[in-house]
Amino acid sequence: MTKIIKLNVIPPPSAKKKTIFTIDEKDVLIKGVELESHICGNCGFVLAENIMVYNYRDVMLQCPNCKSYNGDPKSNSF
Image (cartoon, rainbow, N blue to C red):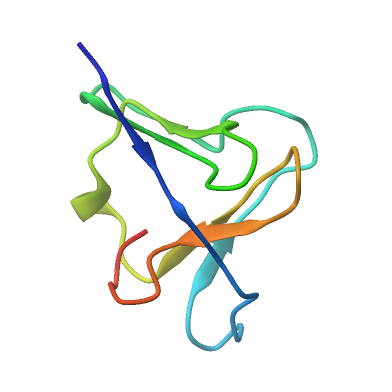
């Protein structure tokens, strides 16, 4: 069963600090084959489906639905 993780909504980052994943269409930003899915902390939209967060460093996800930035400000991964 897939574990659902709600991400933190965080302020827009400096482009020098994080890579921002975003998309114009309302679709999942990242798809994989693992057992964790990550949802927007503001609206609940699925941002990353079936991935393991440790594979992504210095990344932030911008929700295609509500445009909020999601990640963990205390971590190098989202």
